[in-house]
Length: 464
Image (cartoon, rainbow, N blue to C red; front, side):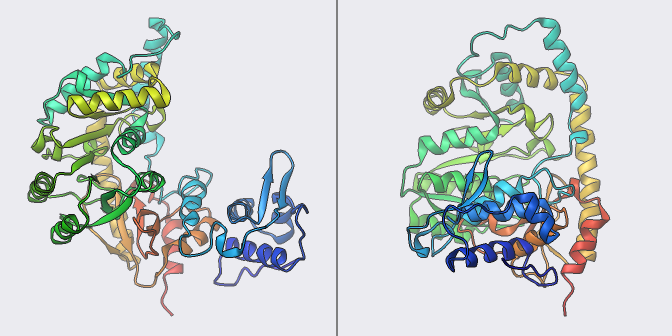
C-alpha cells in the first residue's frame, strides 16, 4: 500500500495519515473497505500501536475513516470537497482538539513532562485514605442527591479558606462543583453568547479556550508577561473590543508560571470598572504559592470578580471537587444552571474532600508539597537551560515552566516525535487563543526528573 521512512524528518504519525489519504483519494482504497487493524498495521510496519492509534484517530476526524465498535476502521464515503472537510481549510481546529484528547492527556505515555497534573505520590493520598475509612465507618447514606450548592460543611470550610485570603463571603456565596473545569464551564455558559468578545490570557488554559470557542465567543488574547500582563496591549484591546468578560489566572498561571504583580491586578480592576466587564479569576494554584498574595477577588470583594478554585492540586484531581464564589444574585443563577445541567455534585466526594482538608496533617502536607515543587523547579530549569532553552520566567513555585529553544519553530512537530519515544510534551499551540503555531512548550517540573526526556530534547534541538 505504502511504506514508512523512519529516517524522515516527517513524524511517523503524519506519514501514516498522508499514506492513507493518498490511497483513498487515488482510489486505491474504496469506500466501505476495511483498513488493517491497528495491531496488524503496527506489526507490518514496525511502529508502535500508540502511533497507529493516533494516526487512525486523525483519519476519522478528517473524514477518511469511520470507526465501528468491535469491527475496526473502514474507508468512509466522501461526498464533500476536501476544503469542506474537518482538518482542511482556514478554519481547521481539529488538530488541537486531537492533541488534547490523544496526546496532551494521554496517561499511557510513561514520561509526562507536558502533563497538567501532579504525580500520585505527591498528593495527599494518606489523607484521602483516612477520609475513605472515616466515611465507611460513618455509614454515609448513599441514597438521594446532595444539596444543590454542595455539602454545607465544605462550603463553610471554603468560606474560612477565603477569609484567610481576605475575601469575605458567606457559605451561601459558595457553589461546589465537579472540579474547577465545571465551575468555569458554568460561568462561561451563564455569561457568554455567540459573537461576544471575551478576553483570555495569551497563552492560556486549553480547556477553557476550547469551551469558549464551542460557545461561539470571539477570543481576544491578552499577552502575558513575566510580571503579569501587557497592560498597554490590554487597555487597547479593551477599548477596541469592548469585552463582556475577562477569564484569567493571575497566580502561577498555566502555562507560563507567571504571577501578576499587585499593580497589574489593580489596573485590571480599574479597566473592568471603567469599561464595565466582569472578571473570572482562576486561582487553582493558590495552595501551591508559598507567599501570601492579594487576588483580584480580594481587591474587588466579588463585586465584578467571580473566584474559582479546587482541591485538585493538593488533595487529588480524581475526586473532582472544585468551587466558585460570586455575588449572591449571580451565584443563584449559577446554582440553577448547575442543577439544570447535571443536578447536584457528588456529596460523597465533597465529604471526602472535607475530611482530607480538616485532617490535622493537611497543612504539613501542603508545606512539604511547596518545598518539593521549589526543588523540582530549580532542577528542571537547570536542565532546560543546559539544553539551550529560554525560560519565560522562573517562579520557583507551582507546577509549570514555559520554555522555547531557538532550533524549534513548531513545538507540535516535536510533540509528535516525542510521543513516538514514549514522551508526552505540551506543545505551545494548545495554549494559543488563535491556535497559532508556536515554538513554546509547557513543562511540568514534577515530571522532569527522567534523563531520557532531556536526552531526547537535546538530540532534537541540535542546530546543523
